[in-house]
Length: 227
Image 1 (tube, helix red, strand yellow):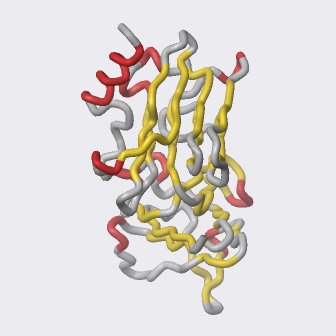
Image 2: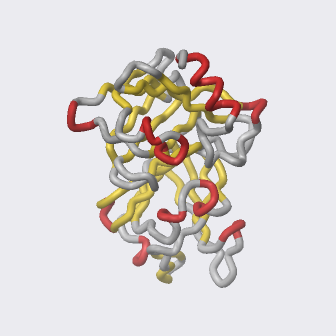
């Protein structure tokens, strides 16, 4: 099959970014291009005219021939791409931050790095990084500016109730929620803002002289930047 025919086929089937259900078709833009080890390529699309520009895709869910076969990623200007060695955005493999550039930026895999299984991609501001363990250890998830009402449906259930530490980018504000759809129930959450605000242990975070325990309890968030 010709390369262009392959790309059209995936777009028509809605298989390029199957988990990006919140994106409007009219607002899709090119975020990055993935190159297969046999020379074929696929486009990763994202959107900007809504409150969630992030997309994520489990590569093996739409074509097994691309799983563990990506050798190069070309990221568009103003965009951010992260690849993972696990189909649920775990085991960070690589990332390309091309947000400040006006030219494409490429990543090429060495022989040991041809094992990408999932990825996330967004265009706009990098807002925060969410870490699996305290002290910024373990797997981490870079997130773009926007609102996520439920990480289980917007990204993957493997990141639900898994965040233990956070780094927030300069001039950005991150507000976490325990429950889906921004329902605080017994706790109204908290806001992280300022210059590179960091919390190395969410279970020990102090808010107005009291401990607010959000360790392994975050299901959604709102994250916005003033840049």
